Amino acid sequence: MNNPLLLLLAGGCILSSCGSEAGSGIVEENFRFAERQITYAFTEIDRAVAAEPESSRTAREERGQGPLVSPRSIYTDGSLHMVPSRDWTSGFFPGELWYLYEYTGSAEWEDAARRFTSPIEREKTNGGTHDMGFKIYCSFGNGYRLTGDRGYREIMLEAARTLITRYNADLGVIRSWDHNRDKWQYPVIIDNMMNLELLF
Image 1 (cartoon, rainbow, N blue to C red):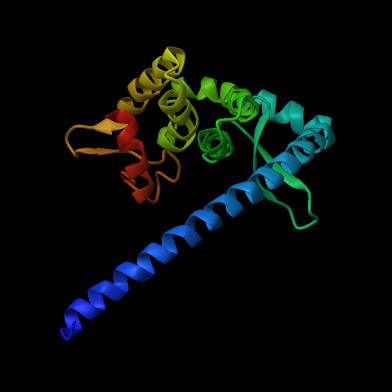
Image 2 (tube, one colour; image 1 turned 180 degrees about the vertical axis):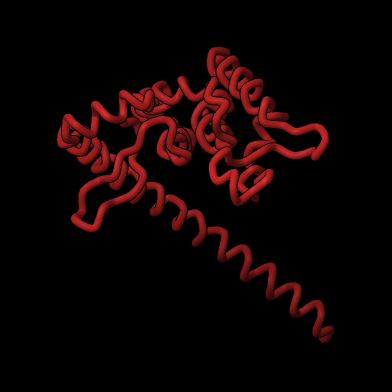
């Protein structure tokens, strides 16, 4: 083997095969870490929902936003920031739960994923946002992909029908936001790309 190119290819094959074994250990380790973190998050979710001031809950309900359904981030005091289904990030947490179910095959994770996916259903008819891909596809989309639940499929189809009402045939784009009309004539942001899969 005097050919340097063959030596380089052989070395690359050896290194990549070593990396794949190490890589599978890293994946396992990270999923186990995610399981621990999300299990802990469940207690923090309950605490955050219980700690919400009545005035905040009432104001949110008066705006038609519904209950707090998903964690979004952590405040500087260490408490969990929960959001209603209307928030563009509401589908991410159920999506994480579906990925844990996919990796582990555990009925426990499937139950949790279904529990946190369900409250987002109300968004299927929310025509005031382009964030359907984030909310519906991450949650119901993963649920349908993994379980074949026909109810999830129907929710996704309704969400897609709602989303397409934001399409402008003359411009060939989906309107992202309705606010700041004094600044933008027809805003379209890169996030819209995540909605296209839902439409297909």
